[in-house]
Length: 336
Image (cartoon, rainbow, N blue to C red; front, side, top):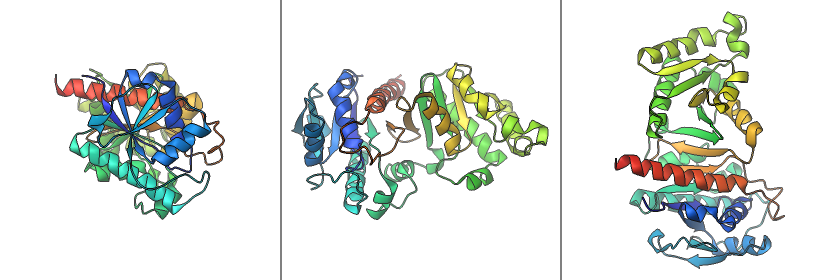
C-alpha cells in the first residue's frame, strides 16, 4: 500500500505529549513510512514548536484526505479552543481536550479515513476530571471503536521482545484472583492468533509464571499447578506451541533473545518492568484487537518535564514507526 495515514493525538496538553510528537515529526523519519495527521490544538502545537525551537510549520486541514505528509510540515486537524497549555497542571479542561482529540481520532477511524492511531500520553486524574469513565486509554479506545474489551490485547514491542498482557489495570490482588484455567487458556489461544495476524506463521508462545521459581512444585504457591499448567496443557492439545509457565525472571530475557515469538505477562507490572528496564524510551505499546492499529509510547505525561523542552522523543519516533509497520502489515494481509 501507499504510506498509511495515521491520526496522531497529542495527549494531555499539560504534559510532554505535544512536545514529543512535534519533536518526532521534526526528526523526520516518520514521513518515509506514513502520512501523519495530528489532532489537537493549533495553539498548543505552536506553543511547543516555539518553545522547543523546532523547524516545523503547521498546516491546518479539514480531513485526513487533505494531508500531504511532507517533511517540515505538520498537517493538523485543529480540534477544540484550547489556546495554550498550562504545563505541569492537572486540569479538567486539559483532560477534556485530550479526550476530545481521542474521540475525534476514533471517529475518523470508524469512517475509514485513517489506517491507524498513535496516541500521546494522558493523565488519568485529569482525564477523569474531564469526564473519562474508563480505567485506562485501552478500555476507552475499545469503547469508542466498538471492540469487545475481552478481545483487546496490549502488546509491548522492544527489540525482538513482544509482551502480551493477560490483565491490565487491576490491582495485584485482583489480577491474581482473575487467573483461571479458562482465562489463561483463552489468552494463549488469542495471542497465538494475534501473532499469526502479525505474520508469524508458526508462533511459539511463552507463558510467564506467577510465583518465584514457578512455584517450586507448590512450595511457593500453587497457581502454577492449579491454573497455569492445566491451561498450557489445554492449549497444547489445541495444537498451539506454548512453553511454560516459565519463571518470570527468565522468560522475558529469553523472549528478547528470540526464543519465543511472544511472552504472556500475567499482570501489569510484570511485563512493564521487564520492557522498561530493557529500553525505557524504546518500548512501544501496541493495542491489538481493535478495528485499526493503535500504538503509543510506554511512558506517562511527565508533568515535571513539561515546558522545559528536555523531553526525549525516541519513544515517540518508535511508536510512529511501529504504527506504520503494523498498519501496512494489516492492510497487506487483508488484501492477500
